[in-house]
Length: 239
Ligand code: ATP
Image 1 (cartoon, helix red, strand yellow):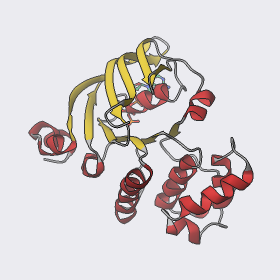
Image 2: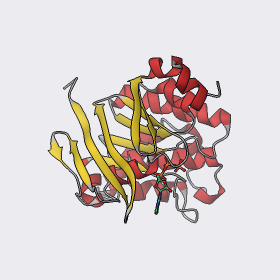
Image 3: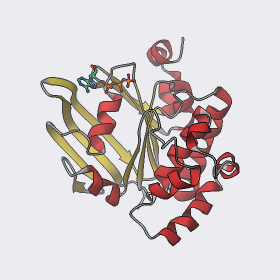
Image 4: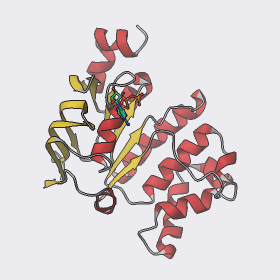
């Protein structure tokens, strides 16, 4: 139902061996909302995504998804429960075709069902439809990002986490990608957690945002408030 948090993170600590990268992060994401996490290089954004998708252990604190504790549940199990992560740098299989990459996104489901779902998902990405038989390595950065997002959708996420979807993407495709994300949220009631360095474009589609600095939440507000905040403008929006 509306108003229920899908993801609830409290006092989350994580890192790499003895290096702590997250020092007590608190974050709430409600169903069908778009929430962005802003922060400079090295703030801990990627680390947060890795912990939430089960790729890095939780050292302290709690993570609840749909009311259930999920700290240190294996990544594979989290995908089946609906937490899907589109990693930074896209990670598409360059030698495989667009279609083959998409089929891999639905690997947990019967092939016939996945084929129908691909047809549905491609309606959001007409550029990919045109290039369905091409090798992924021949796509532009923006098209590869679209492919990575489409592949994530084929896993039937309830929460889709995107790590820097604007990275290496030409400005015109950036706008297309972000407005498509909003469209997908509106039509599918998908919940999105977006990590971005491009605060402008992220705040444009988000409902709420968090700013993290050296592994701590330093600000949390509606996207409109953050976009109008002097400190945020100075640090992340170029004045
Ligand atoms: P970027 O935008 O550059 O990806 P980020 O906000 O995602 O930055 P993280 O990559 O999460 O930041 O890094 C957070 C901190 O953890 C940094 O101090 C970084 O140096 C450290 N860190 C990241 N990956 C590792 C690793 N594999 N081993 C050790 N330290 C790491």
